[in-house]
Image (tube, rainbow, N blue to C red; front, side, top):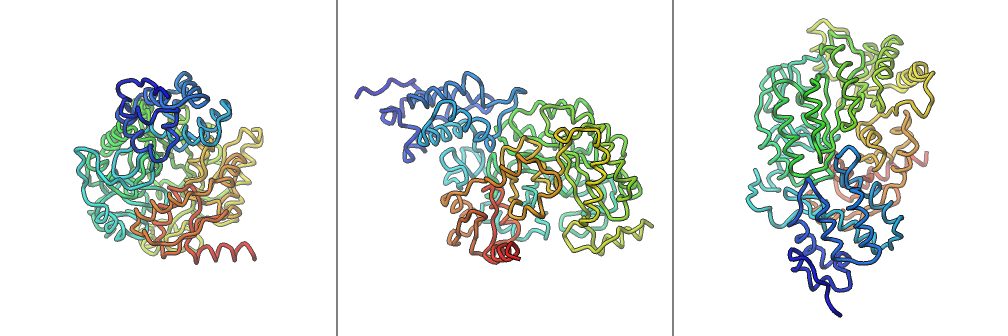
Length: 530
C-alpha cells in the first residue's frame, strides 16, 4: 500500500498514517499528540484540526473539515468552547451529523483534546488526568508534588492553605495573593483579629504573592487539572476586585488565558468594576470566567459595601454576552434579612437587573462571630448553627420561593431565572447545562435540587457518564493513594479509603460524578431505604 504524502511537520507520523488510523490507535496517541501539540497556538486551534485531517480518512476526515470550516471550537462571541463542554457542544452533534462510528467518535474526541494546551505537571491529550513524568522545558515548580500534598494536608478545616496559598476547597481550587479585606462585613470568615496562620490581623489585604507566583504554584499543584479544575480567585480570603488587588486579579486572568486554559474561574464579589474593567474581562478568549455578585439586602451596619453601586454593577455585567454572571442571594441570615420586605426587595432587584441564574445561601456563624457582633452592638441572627455549616431553614427557603413567585407573577415560567442552592449547580446552569454539577450533588436530589433547577440540568446530572477505571487510578495516584480499592456503580464511585472532604471534592470535580467513601455510601443507601 502506498503511504500518504504528509506535510513536512507531520512526516514523523508517516509510518502511522497508513490506512488513516493514526488517531484511532491508543498506542500511537502519545506520539500523535506530541506532534500535533508542536504546532498548537492557544489562540488558533484550527491548524491542529487541519493536521489531524491528514491522519484519517472517510467520515472522520469530513467531520474534522466541518469543524475547521465552521469554526465550531469557538462561540459566536469569539470565546473558546471550554474543553469540558466539547462533548455536548461539538463532539456529539458532529458525530451525529457525519454518522460516525463509536471508534471514529473516540478518535475525534482525541483529536479535539489535542487542540488544547496542558501546562503544568498534570495532563496530556491522551491522558488528561494523569501526572506527567517530565515537566515542560524551563518549568521550575515551587515544590515537589509530594511537598505540596503534605502542605494541603495541613490546611484549615475549610481547606484554606495559608502556607501555599493555592488551596483545594469545596467550590474549587482557590488561588490567593494574601488574606485580609477592608470591606468589614461583620460575618466575614477572615475578620480583624483572626489568628489564621499568615493573616496579619489587619483589614487591609497583605499581598504575599505576585500573579506570576500564584499561577506558577497553581500549575505545580498535583490536584490542579488543566481545563477541568474549577478555580476561584480569593474564594474566602479577600475580594478579588478591590482596587488594591484588581491589578493582580487581572494579571492572573490574563496569564491563565495566555496559557490557553479553559478552566472555570470564579470571582465572588461585593465590590464593583468600571466599564473599562468589564471590557478587560470580556477580552479573555480561553478562560471561562464567571462573576458572582452578592446581594441579599443585608443591613448596612452588618454588610457595609455600598448597595446602590453593587446593584448597578450587577445590571451592567449582566448585559455582557462574554461573562457568565450569577446573582448571589447570599448570605441569608435568619431574622436579619428575612422579613417579607427584605425578600421582596431582593427579588425585585434581581428582576429589574435581568438576573438569569440565582444562587441561594445561608450564613455560617460560630461563637467568635457572636463576640464580634456583640462588640459592634449588632443584632444576632436567629437559629441553631452547626460549625462550618450554612444555615438556611426549609421554612425560610419556602418563604423565599413564595416571594419569588409573587414578584415574578407577570413573567412566564420559562422566562424566570433558575434558582439553585449550590454554587457549582448555578455555574453549570449559567453556562447552558452542558455538564453535570461538578460537585456531584445529584446523589441527594431531594435535598440539593429542590429550589428551581431547570429540567435540562436535572437530565444532565441524572445522566452523568460513569467514570473509567483508568481515570480513577490516575486521580488516586495524584492523591498518593495508588493502592486504594474502588467500585464504580450507577449512583456513585465508592472509594475504600478514609478520604478527607477535600480529597473527595477533588475526585468529584475531576470525574463530574458523585464520590463516597464506603461508610458514606452505606449511609446514602440506608437513607434512600427509609
